[in-house]
Length: 66
Image 1 (cartoon, rainbow, N blue to C red):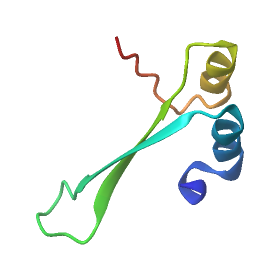
Image 2: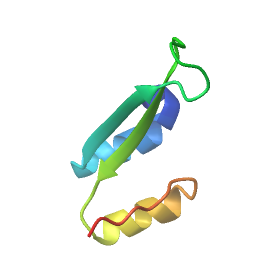
Image 3: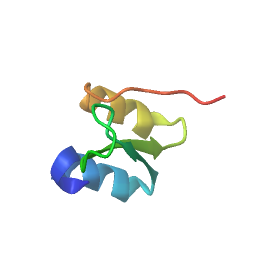
């Protein structure tokens, strides 16, 4: 995860104690392909730190769960 997300983003999530959620699935392009897809989610409470995280990393997608 560190390699894909970058050291700074990884440390930010870890230092705030947010929970990582990884969802792995088979390749979308070809059944039986050795490559898989991994979606990375961070379960973070709605707080000032969360807002700053989204502003600092504009490439992340905010997903609200109700």
